[in-house]
Image (tube, rainbow, N blue to C red):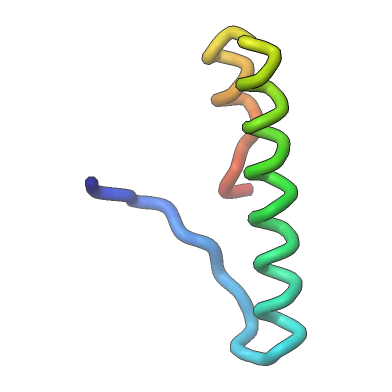
Length: 50
């Protein structure tokens, strides 16, 4: 699997915690939409790596 995107963060305990909270919120949003069986186009509009 090749992934071109990544998350940037400050290499401090606070920066890591903030980045992980952001990632978790986006992942939860994807799972919520998947549970509702939404159109895949709606998933792509989440802009996960914004």
